[in-house]
Structure formats: structure tokens, C-alpha cells
Amino acid sequence: MTAQGGRRGQWLRIVAPAAVGVVVLAAWQALVVVYRVPAYLVPSPLLVLRTLVSDRVLLFHALASTLGVALAALVIAVVAGVAAALVFAQSRWIETSFFPYAILLQVTPIVSIAPLIIIWVHDLWAALVLCAVVVAIFPVISNTTLGLRSADPGLVDLFRLAGASRWQTLWRLRVPGALPYFFGGLRIASGLALIGAVVAEFVAGTGGASAGLAYQILLAGMQLNIPRMFAALVLIAAAGVALFAASGALAHAALARWHESELPRDS
Amino acid sequence: MTGFVAGPAVIELSGIAKTWPNGTRALAGIDLAVRRGEFLTLVGPSGCGKSTLLKLIAGLTHATAGRIATSEGRPRIGFVFQSPTLMPWARVDTNVRLPLDLARMPRARADARVADALALVNLAASAGSLPRELSGGMQMRASIARALAAEPDLLLMDEPFGALDEFARERLDGELLALWSAQRFTVVFVTHSIQEAVFLSTRVVAMAARPGRIVDTWEIDEPWPRSAAFRLSPAFAAHAQRLSLRVAEAGGGEPGGAVAQ
Ligand SMILES: Nc1ncnc2c1ncn2[C@@H]1O[C@H](COP(=O)(O)OP(=O)(O)OP(=O)(O)O)[C@@H](O)[C@H]1O
Ligand SMILES: [Mg+2]
Image (cartoon, rainbow over all chains, first blue to last red; front, side, top):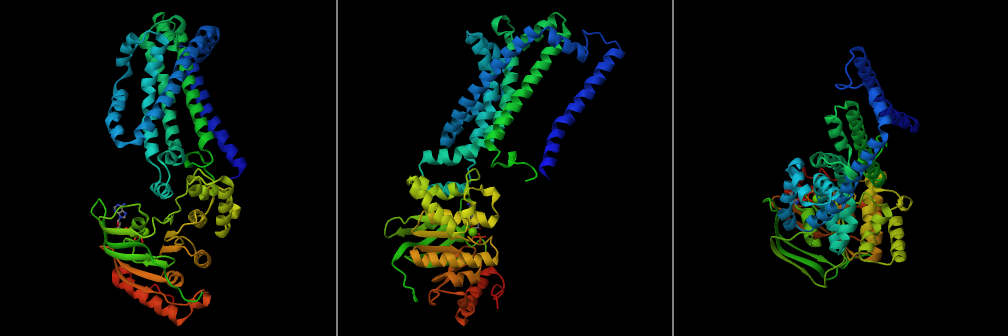
């Protein structure tokens, strides 16, 4: 393929899904108008857009709040998750002793622990972040641990022959080799952090300074303000896509030169 | 030099057996002394434990029974694996510099050695490439450069030229021999090619499988340096015939089948 063909492929990746979106939205708009569906059942896309504009101060404030919680949680999940993985990778004993608890954390539904966390942690913002961390941390731990353990056995032998210290083997071999696994975990964690933040806000159900999108959805639901509910939903989805894209871009920046997952397909 | 006289044993294996944890008896009753300065080649059917034997010599795995003794302290070992085993994220020169970096050699000295090693395997132009941008044979040459850069006392090579075409193999055989005669390190070499074994070695070891064992060992007592003419001599054919027969008896295929006439 030529560079031109490659660019055409990139365009297709943007244009094709966008076309699908436009068709679906147009059909939705048409159906709502033709059948005169009331706005408190299903609002039309244009109405949702208008609400997005008219309620922008409220909604974007909420978006900033939710995104803030999700991003803080993601950063903490990455730092703590990578630290845990580094410890796990040091010894099978540590991993076998502690890994089941990481799984326990993962399989316990966040809605069931969130009330406890919110009671225990007095600062509401910290409680929300903690809930989101609990949801997002597992893929970081498990992927990074797997990556650190997956070093090429031949290279491990080579390091041993050269008399490498444990530390040298970790930094020069295990950590670079674990990066593709880590970024796979990050991609999943970025979505989970947002889900965790939204669920925690729902459980907390409070307004005030940290009123996020979930709270706006709850409130709009009670007031039967369905267009605003949809507008908030759109923002949550957009935030999720943005987080996913950002983590993908990070992975690309780090791996593009050498890892199969990020190589151009026609090379 | 015309004749070759080996030095004392660098490393001595006696009564070595190796059974892998899954029950595979890879080696049994191996007695072998690797002598300083020799070019020792192991030949045998696939699965007879040649790679396992190299790993035992390198200390990368432990014997189930027997003793491995080193006389003059642990030699500095260079290992060329059956596959290139390069770090995919690092440039070729960084890969070659790895053993020097791990030994904390000053950067300038290490870079000079890397440049020499890369030139030796004809890869100077690819120093800045990533392994994935190299052909399989080039990757293998990079891994040979990496082993040479560390200036080992004992060089263990596991079918290093197996992935190369006949011409590249013969050229590298020649270069390896030139280097070996100049620097006098010890080589334990594994190959499937009878010709390569006879051409390169001061001594050959024929092995059999299930369990892996040594069936015959003898000196290739032919003059040095060896040129292309050696490949056409009657002596060469005689050694090749004998090696081919031993390996065939051991279950490695048709006798004579691997000998070019
Ligand atoms: N890590 C391992 N675990 C279990 N069995 C092994 C392991 N490595 C090798 N083996 C077994 O030990 C035997 C000898 O293997 P080895 O790799 O030494 O053979 P080889 O002579 O080098 O063969 P080839 O010429 O095909 O490379 C084989 O039967 C193989 O299946
Ligand atoms: Mg082998």
C-alpha cells in the first residue's frame, strides 16, 4: 500500500462510523417527529443538542467533576497497580498470597461496597475517587504482572549469563517487555474508572460541589427532564470515548516503533 | 599454525544426566571435557539433547546427576541461542552492547567494541535499525555480534548459522574460524550440517537420542588454516562419511544422505 492508500484507510476509519452515526441520528429525528413521540419519553437528537447548549453551565460543570474523579482514580489505579505488579513479580509467594484479594476486589460489585466506602471516608470527593480506583485497578495489576512475568526466557538466560543484577533484569528487560501488556490494562482501566466514578456518584446521590453527571441524571429523572438526562448521557459517553482514545494514543506513542500491536498493517 | 594442540580442560562433565521436570530424559551418562582453545562440535539427531548440553555447560540449568567441574574458575561465557533472542524494543547496537552495559563497561569503550563486532558480522550499516527491520539471518548475525562483543573465553553456539543460506553460512564459517585462530577462545558449536562440523572443528562429538548420549568422539586432525580446498580433499570426505554414519546409526537419517558427494 502507498502512503496515500494508508491515509485513505485512516479517513475511512473516521468517515465510515461517522456516516453510520449520522444515518442513525437522522432516522431517530425523523421517527420522533413523524410519530410525535413526546419529549418526556424519547427526546429528538436536536432537542438533546439544544439542551446541551442551554444547560451547558450546569452540564459541563458536572462533566468536569465526573472527569476529575475518573482521571484522579485512573492515575491512582495506575501508580498503585503498577507498584503492586512490581511487588508481585518479585516472588511467586507474594503473588499467590495477595493475588486472590485483588480478584476479590474485582468480583465484588462496586454498588455493594460503595455505600461502605462513602460512610467510612468522610471526604466525599475522596470516597468517590476510592470507589473508582477499586473498579479500575484490577486490569492494571493483572496485565502488568503478566507482562513482567512474560519476558523472553532466552533473554532472561542471557541476562543471567552476563551476571545481571535483579534490578538490571527488571529495568532493562522486564519493564520494557511489560509495556504492551500494561497499555492493554490501561485501556480497560480508563473505561472502568469512568464507570466507577459514575456508579459511586449514583450511590452517593449528593449534589453540592462534587455534583457530577450521575447526580444530574438522577435529578433530571426525578424532575422528568428527559432531554437533560439524554444530554448528560451523551457527555458520559463522550468522556468515555475521550479517555479510551487518550490511553490508545499513549500506547501508540510508547510502542509504535517496535510492538506488533501498533505497527502499520501494510509494513 | 598447521597442527592444533588443545590446552587443559576448561570445563569437565562426568556422568552427567539430565531429566526435565516433565520426565523427558534429555541426557544420560555424558562424559566430556572441553579443552582450552579447541573448537568442539556436537552433531546429532534432533532432540538428542545438544541444546540441553550447552545449557548445562553454561550453568543455565542443573544436571540431575553427575559433576561439572571448572578448572580455572568460571570462564566468561558467550552464548548464541538457536533463535536470535534480541530485545525487540532496542536498536541493534543497543542489543549488541547489552552484555557490556550489564558489566557496566564505560560507554566509549563499549561503543568501540560494538562497532568492531558489528563490522565483523557485516552489520555495521544496520546498527541503528530495530530487530524487526532485519531479515532472520541478519538478526542471527546480530546475536553473534552480541556474543563476540563480550570477548568470551568460552563461546557456546547453538546452530548459529542454521537459518542462513549456504553462501552466507560458508562465509561466516570462514570468518568465525579466522576470529577463533586469532583470539584462541574455546568454542562448543552445535550444527546439523556434517560439512560445517568437519570444516570448523578440531574435534567432533556424535550424539544419539533417547536418552541423549555420546556415541563417538574424535579429532579432525587436519592442517590449519583451512581453506575451500579442504572441503574437496579425501580427508574431508572420510571424516564426513564417518560422522554421517555415526549420526545415522544413532537414528538421524540415512547413512551418507547428508554428505555432499
Ligand atoms: N525446558 C524443557 N522442558 C522439558 N523438556 C525439554 C526442555 N527442553 C528440552 N526438552 C526435551 O529434551 C530433549 C532434548 O532437547 P534439546 O533441545 O536439548 O534437543 P536438541 O538436540 O537441541 O534438538 P534440536 O536439534 O532439534 O535443537 C527433547 O526431547 C526435548 O523435548
Ligand atoms: Mg537444539
